[in-house]
Image (tube, rainbow, N blue to C red; front, side):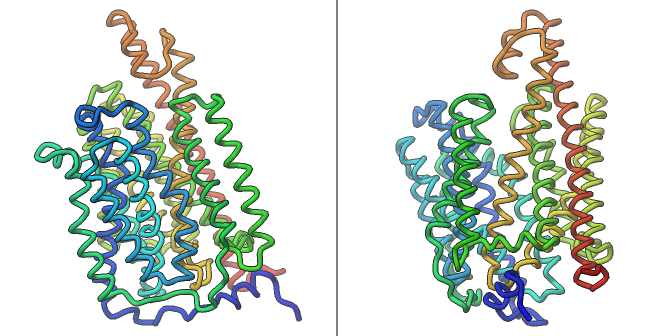
Length: 507
């Protein structure tokens, strides 16, 4: 009797499952690593509110500001798979401590930077530490908690990310009101010091006991391919989706990632075992994760445009009005309510319900925003409930489909999908907004702010605002359809996987 490639791979990579009771200090460890993760997520958004200060004090040009923001996310997203693979091979505790140390050194260098070049380099270094932290924290969660507690623990882990995105602009604004711009980075140092002490004393070591040979070429290809893909997505709105720079970068990304997939299918010890994609639970979780982050990222991007350009709120005011989405995620996951719903409903039903709620939230924002903030609030709460239920369900399904020895790679896949889905949501829904606006606007302009600035008279300005509102509405509705269809696909695949596991579906 022969075994399938997937079965032989699982035999190679099998690692003892977490104990039934979990680690005795697992909740304390989760609190510490969540605090470390929070600083990583905060640095994705906290720099945005410091742009005026950086422009004045460092003489930063627009291109400098873009690279200060993008250097962090590009390096982090490009290294997620590699960081997860390194954690599996060399030890998750070691890589977690290394990530904290690199993040702390980068934060110190950023806080003391005297030129834009120094700050960009420091941000890139922080991105390396951030990639290690985001992958190892989830991998450690899977190791220290018993399987019965995975859903609740992953829910808290994912809620920390939502809290970071909501609090980033608020904390940044508070710090800049009382200190100089470097303080937004130096505040990370006490957290890093506490985290290092806790990791050394509390976190148990775990790694892939098989000790597969390092896949160096796969690491290079995945890093280059993902960094190119993310750069194409984030530079599209500024340079134009049909510009030579964006098209060339996208072509490089597609080519390199195709080469990565080809290499991974042939190498004896792949960094990302492509046989995982034969598991319908894995592919269902992939579809769900991409669509959840697509909807959340795109919705926040579009809503921010509407709040600032149409309703005239400042960045901090707009951030406060979108905070209920993240706070809903935090409340439902920290209280354990989302985990109870997931256990009661099952993963397929939870996936479908979460997508239905998110789609309903997008529709509410699209159709009720013009009637005041109450309609927007309803939409944000619906999306928040959907994310609170869907994010842990998809992450748990994905991590459950991967052998414990590859927990780091699984966490890397999870982080990569989140980055890709968020960027894709901004790109696709932003493109719908731009095309709809271009068809309706009474003035020609390269951006929404430029269109408002060039409007002559109150009547023309009103028509520009109406065009923006129409574009936001159309984009939200497109996002709602995409999220709903993704929910159906994810639920079907996850249901089939459950039936296959129970032997209901015949060969």
